Image (cartoon, rainbow, N blue to C red; front, top):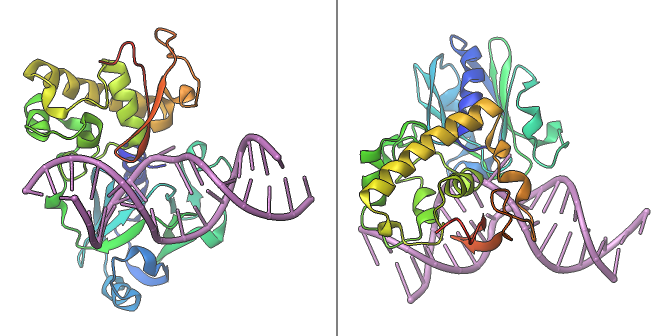
Length: 257
DNA sequence: ATTGTGGCCTGCCCGC
DNA sequence: TGCGGGCAGGCCACAA
């Protein structure tokens, strides 16, 4: 579920643990450690005091006087601070909420922080290489997006979802943005002229801001029409459902060109 | 190098 | 009610 918007909310809630010291890592899911040894990772975290938080795209970081703790949420991860699960409205599937899905638990001198992730596609990485991520989509400028798109022959949607080029956009946000601005997700990225690239950057920023205000990535105007046979809420044309870049994609064949 | 594909995991929903 | 298939808002390794 989490795209940039949700992760930013997680970051704000994670601020509550600034100043606390890690005393234990009682649960750590080996699957999301990129091959690192769970015991070693836990040992490196214990004793560290959290000094702040940061976010780049969908990557949440806990800054400490030791390693930076990078947290990823995959498709279904949620952040729970001191037992309080925020963004309940965004719960994957609508209801599930079980302790056994707590894949990572970081215990502090008081309270704890956990990642509850049914599908185990999230992860934890110490000192993640943030420089490999593109600029954050929430504040992307026209000039920056011009670089992101460059002369790429990839499909526009794929380029916008490439976290190494532009960080933060997921499947839902990209579909919403391209629907709003009227661009075909399947067209070649490089086919956008300069004016279109600048307009698209503005649309990205505006859409992220709008959906943040509304309450999340799932609150877009297109969201409720993401099903087979739905009609475009703007012009009534049957929406196209395609797989682009391996992601299910909805678009309007009439006004997205 | 860039781009596209498949797979990882698990839970849920739909149709039989 | 039970079961199988398909699907899911992310990311990575790998192939062409």
